[in-house]
Image 1 (cartoon, helix red, strand yellow):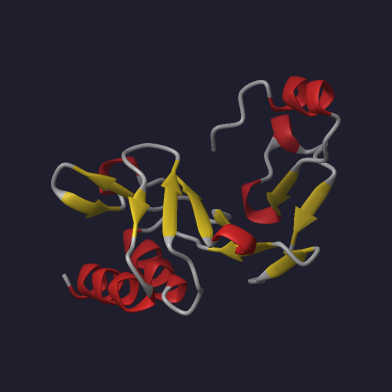
Image 2 (cartoon, one colour):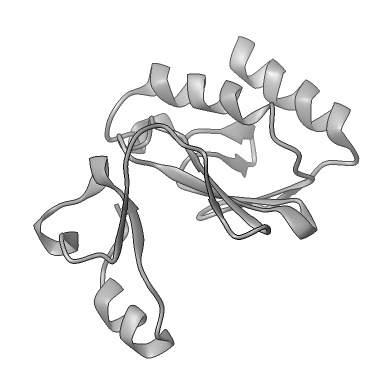
Length: 138
């Protein structure tokens, strides 16, 4: 949903833009790649895109496997009060967003780098799973 100047960025960095088809609007209709379905999708050996609907219908998280980093955008972040999906900014479905957090548990990552809030480093796979599972149960 944060797509201001996306065409200028694509030109500046000579890159293809990727967007889930559920989030395509008039201003983003010309993106080079539109993801369909529920994924996940691989971009080579190092990058996996994970469909995580909730914040928007087409929210996608990017997993950079070599460094075990999950870029979550607006999907999941750390705030002063703990792990958060920032319900007040949800544009689609809070229950689906919580389900998508549950879905992330299966993936191997040590870091969450959000679009807002603080980055999160987990000491290991077990700590990551424990924290995400506790959040989903709340």
